[in-house]
Length: 205
Image (tube, rainbow, N blue to C red; front, side):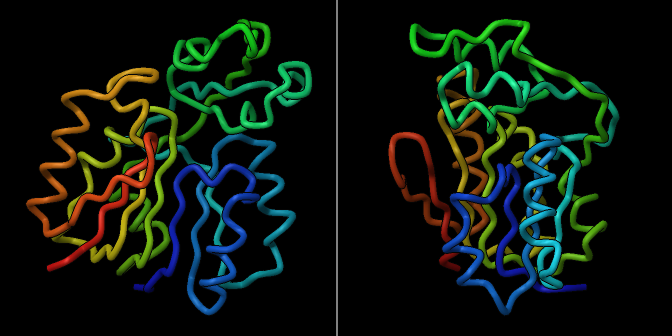
């Protein structure tokens, strides 16, 4: 079993993680990213780092194989938003719900692949994870499905950062978020609002 300094579920292609990766240069790092073209970039940029592991699974609340949806690589420039490459989901409608006057996404811009979804327990088993200093989760609305299944008595996690803005549907926060906050509090985490989209949970006891 190994200690990890950083585990990122929804790593995109790593451009916003450089500082955190550098901070953990002497620690084990796991970057999880199922969007194929993002995963390829991660492998290209970090394949020479023996402490960095790249996972192409999607993380969910169950172990299964099903469709995973994401914005086509060739549509990113047309749509005019760099963040479009980071929208991957088990729910196609979640991606379409991002449509706005400045983001005119349609069905034609979405690709799907059959992919292996694994739960958090299987992720831990696959990479022999004993502890995590910093766990980050940004998975376009699937945060609840992951967080509800984490057994905090089984693994030591010091800090946890997660996107909260899609917890109960696209751009909607509600009861599911409160359930996770309560679970984290019961397991000794202090809940800190980073900004209007993200939450930090820090272990205090």
